[in-house]
Length: 531
Image (tube, rainbow, N blue to C red):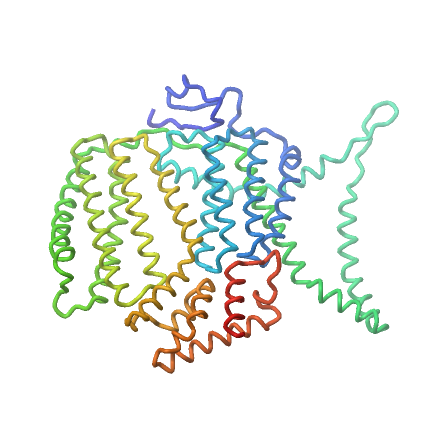
């Protein structure tokens, strides 16, 4: 059974008797799709083309505008229409993925934070892949390793089939030509395709039209003005960009649907818990001993030591030396515990040791968070420090799921982790961390801690989300007795003036399609400051 292969197909037609033998199969359903290429183009071609056009309208030169929300909605509709054509089984519980995609897509036009929106786009991509896999395959018994393998197969199959949009379309063009018959019913020779002549005609016409239009512009000034006006409205590079983007989205979308329709992702159906637990017990025992000793020292000197620091240490040096190392240890602990659960045979002793490592990890998380708090309390917030708090919080939540998974193999740890990361992403996008960073640092400055305010950092490293906070506190920031800081604020104000007056700037060209809430609020805050 260990050498057999498990092939996952449509969920509702699973044969329980076959599952007992180690191979999941569906009666009368081939491994590879036998649907002719012309039918594939007929099934997915028009839908994919419409999706590509809509996506280009929403996304072209618009990474964080209002229409990104409509792109996320269009993506959900396109995926669901395609999955229905594949006769997939979409459960009610799977809608959490589509809802999350739309919520993240909606948050894109609420913020101007490039880092967060970039991570949000990655999350949308991951959620789309997981949603498709769960709709087409029986993943009820999948755990972390199988999910990773399935995603790897999906990406690999996608790359392997990138040429299928071209080959399928070529077959489609050949098959749509109807066969004609003579009076006796014999098929007549097929006529040569006229599409080639159309393409050749267009290729000849383009350079000829360029020459003719140039001559006509020289011949008549009014015609030249009309052509100039048209070209000013219709930017040739934008036309090329729109066409290329539409083609790329079509190829990517059609290839993904084409591979998903095959339903040929194969995963090994073997028990991974085959290794002797004494090995894991030995390693875990030694690690646990060191962790317990470290945690006792942390509890004694860090939490109950009255904030005492070692000799010749500052808060900054002590926090920086300890935080990132402890964060790395916490991440390593997550990997160690998952490996111990997935690869080794059942053992009560091993479970107890892994649980002890989890408990020690919580103490390390608390120690790391406390060190970071001391540093922030003295030197203010930055992006990295906010993200560090977030990572610690995510690890703390994941450890809850890992502890449950230690004692319950059926617990869906991967889904739990994905849900945790998704919710974290949504919260970060909607709360505007850079605005909170500016508010906190200014508040610390007003309470006498001048070291928390680095005006250069606030004006150059934070996103436009923080602009209303900085502009509304312009007078407070200018109270700093530092000519350099005042110059930085003046440069920040001048940058706003340039962005508002410059023709091609995002603020100046903002319309319904590219509307962004943070950009609008920043513009409004500047007008309130200026007038």
